[in-house]
Image (cartoon, rainbow, N blue to C red):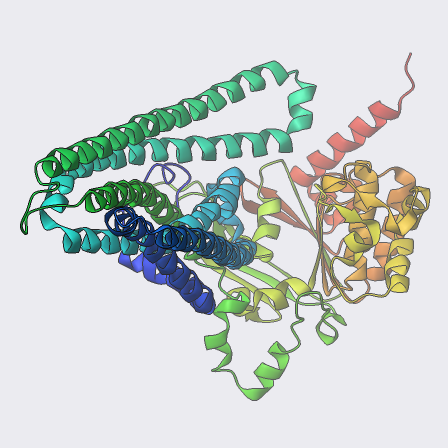
Length: 629
């Protein structure tokens, strides 16, 4: 899937491969489909009753002045209308159920897939475009099942039934009525072609609106801070106007098509009347009765209605094929190797002991027990990485031959200028990305061979940019793990987050806004520490995790971490070098390479890059603490 252009490609009107994949979602509901088709056929067959009754009444009952026959015909016609209503109601309910069930299944599968796609996929695809896949594209498939395929089968059945009846009653009148069919087909073809282009424009512009709105709302604080409201409103108005124009073009096409079909239907009726005028009352086999002509007028009117509907069904089919192509392209995106859906083949080849070890991976919402009781050994072996194309003539390497080893109970600190590659090291360890060269080992195993759930369950990650979900405070600390309230509260108390909770109106049940907007950055970081501690990880990864807390809170966190890190492995990214002076090893990164390594005192004694960075920060801190003149 690409970041642009995929909304503009409609593909074929009908793709058998895509249709077969769609049928997989319909198959569990084949009973509903069968019921809807039966009701549609009943509804189509009942449309023949009215013309037949009209012919009988005019040709038989009225000349004989048989009031009873007329009353019986009227009662039968009324019963037919009731049955048509019942069949139409049942068909609408069943096709609605079918569409909603298929939509639910597809959206569930799409969301599950989106959660398992690698982070690199989201670097290439705007979130707004993906939201369009899960919402609008799935809705297009709902329309296919509710008003498209099943209803189209009903229209085809009605067309065939009416056409056969017309030919049986009088083939010459039928030919007169069918004379306009080439023009109907031509108008339908032009309509389909124009609507196809209009539909493509609508889909493209809708995806652009979704992407724009999602990005601006996510960055709303920046927009407001820099006074960009008017400029962004102007840009949105342009996108919205483009979307409106595309819809208006579609409306104009529909506004032209249906009157054209009405005119052609009227021409067909006029042709029928002209053809019948010389034969009404004529003796012999070529003669026609008035009732036959009246029945034919009704049949012709009912014959052209499904033709209009089928043209609309064509448009629905076109849109659904385009939507399904995009949806299945998303479902076909390769998952991260090591995700649960890619492990079945691997686990079938494991020895019993390995299978038992894999079984310790928790189900969603569970916890890992034994694997986190002790720290883990992490080793980078000559790791190279670029976010671009590694096969290019001159790749822009972010990491260049990075190697290090950190054992249980040790703390490794990563320092360096912005862009030196510190966060990339963590991203590779968490398997958000894959290195192009070299290996990353955890307890001697290549992390590419480990199940992702098992790897990440061993890691407690505290970021500088904290993400909290909308929901209560306790659920954000627990994060789906099987923790008791006491365990959650104890984890919070260890880092002082309990004081944050005590100040909230509803305590642990206080509902947070999106991304924890009702809390300060420092309060969110304290809750993130509580979340990491509650998970009892074997490996702590700290990405400048105390940057937004005050000195008192930082001291409490450092004291809690000192206890927590005992026997465990810690990798810390630090911008404030005063927080990592006690680290067992410090790696100094510069342009993606390890240029220095050692303890704090050793690196100061070398008087290299680390020493310069440390002196610069000390000087800045002293300047900041100096009282103003």
